[in-house]
Image (cartoon, helix red, strand yellow):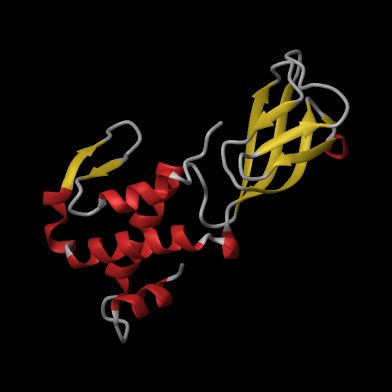
Length: 174
């Protein structure tokens, strides 16, 4: 979802409210990403990890779109890898294991992008709409703010139970 689509949903014309609309859109998308474990927009990521004597590795971000590179210490082993489960972000080594003797570096792309499921897009619109129309009262809707990770928990004035029920079907299980 982008700002122009959200403005159509909110029936906003012109650019006078663009900053607020972008703020509520970003907040909604961020909440859904944290809640479900899935990236909405496609991005490129790099992770380092120590092998676990398994042929699988689960990336921090999903859905997995592509493995750009995979290194075992300094040796390129990209051709030995493939995506086992895109939705769970699972990469598999075709022949072998991610040995605990090595440090691995993986670069990959992940996110829904234009393939965003319609019910997640609907939730973005619903949460954004609720945030937009209560923008001035937003401080009253905050239950807690996580000091370590900056997460914000809203009460059910903003995130209705039916929205959470819909998002629960999309929670990433790793």
